[in-house]
Image (cartoon, rainbow, N blue to C red; front, top):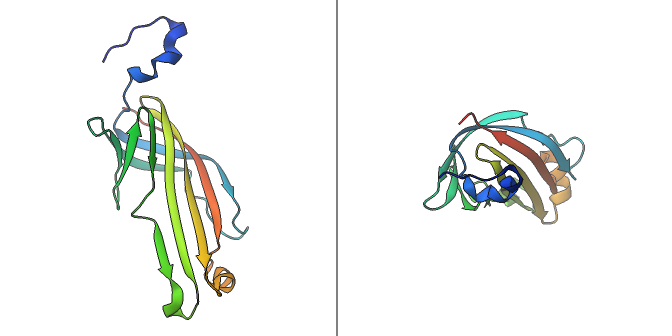
Length: 154
């Protein structure tokens, strides 16, 4: 696709590019968390992730195990990480508690080879032993959100 426009129209040309498939380096720019101070939620500052772009569907495909498919709406995307989300019943370990992990990723391509977004992990617990489990197993009920940018060389 070729797009030609005077410089003052560039902001209106968001539809004139398609996301670039390839390897993206994700860099965490900031983090918000209501988790306890001793809960280590920070990931590595840069991580190489393979991103496939299928404009026929349209979707992003995050490589790895498990592979995640994120619907692409224009330049925006969102996924619920259904393969990562988990519900763990700790009754077999002597606790009255069910711990749930819900993870999602949202973002937008700002140019064809650069995206900005957030990845959030919500951890919750239901049951009489949730407080003791949080202390003993380091499984707190809390929310962590990472803000990131990702770029590729094309």
